[in-house]
Image (cartoon, rainbow over all chains, first blue to last red):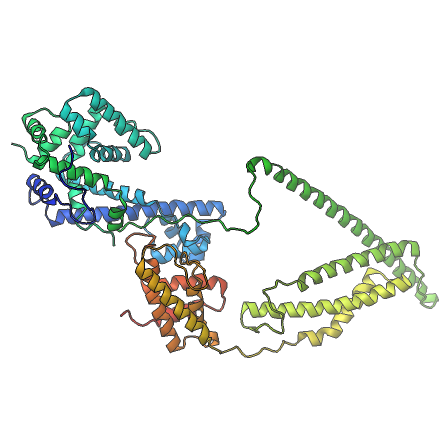
Length: 229
Length: 384
């Protein structure tokens, strides 16, 4: 299947946005796709990078303290905060901007070496949080497997290429097995460890059944102003 | 009947029901709604981690990797650094061991010589006390073979130590101006350090002259002991005491405001802002002088500007210059943070930004006290 239109510019609304929107809106009841639902998705999307950053900063503080053979109390006294605040940061709690700057100065770390995770990790965390929220809203009683990194990358490599759909259309079991191998190899390249759960055709079918609607709904929402502020 | 989306999901999950078959048939036509929907979903999925989408989502760019400092003329690293550096720890441990053993041996020999000299002195004192009753005090002629070798060696060792300290103190770094040229700031730690340094130099000069005299007399008579040397040195220091106890003259702090520097800084800031306006995501901006400005921590321009604004060359918080600096910082801060926002969702306020820079400055400048910082931040005019 070849796209009927030239590639879309993701910074703007895609040219087939009308059809895409119509099909999504037909599926989701109006009450589910209202503004409160969308606000909830955006909220999860924006919170996730902050959580990831806080965890990375906490681990960094812990490493620095061990490396410099210092205690939480020592650091707290240097920063003028309570020791419990330092313990809270180390556990991944939110840290204010001035305190973070003080930490950079205290540990003599240049701004460019701030312990911020890579951009793709932040985006991945944001997508997973938004997808999980959408999945829960679509079916609150669903108790399937949570969307971990392996499942996310499996969905990504399956939906971003036409091979899986083409194999289904041809109803060719060999093509489906090849496609399952391709997805597994792509996921292995995206993950540090090799995938262990989604490696077969049946597992991919179940993954699409569980997460397909949330994935397609998420794609519909992204062009509508999720920008982090 | 299922919705179009549910049918598409059924089809993609490999179902073979009537709805999935309907989608399969519909996909034969590239212009059908199902075909266009799937094409759009593929395109959007593939773009999830694309640069335009990540930028539109406001995710910060990855921090550049720190560049190691480049040394001109530096020798290239060997191809196998592990092998070439494997002898370093052993060599270092061996060298430290040898030096420690030499120092211990030298200290032991000196201690023995001092003990021998003290024993000789005590014996001399006892003899003098006994002879004081019946005979007039006659200084016992020392055994030249013993005293010359012990006292003079000890004295020479002490003199060598004093000379080493003097050489170390006199070899000040090139960046530190001599006392006469340096601005005197006795109220600060730096000022106190200068005063202490000068006092120490004068004290040691007196000590050196006293020891020189002692060395000369010892070479002539060979009868002086370590205690004699101490006594003479103490006398010399006592004579020099009144001169050394006085505080050095402290010139008034300079109140000169470097207008020319501020004009240059203003020009640099304008160029920086223009460059940022052309490419706000630029990682590096070159300012006049050819120095790149890679980030906040290395931003000497802002450092100098804020230092001048905070201290105002002795007159803290002049209103006009404070407003000027605040305006500059307000304009420059967001421009620098744009594209380099480390924490997504956080936009530090102007006061926080100023405080960050000031904290950074405070490390190297003891004159910027917390009180000065608080005054400056509180005195910032409200945001326009």
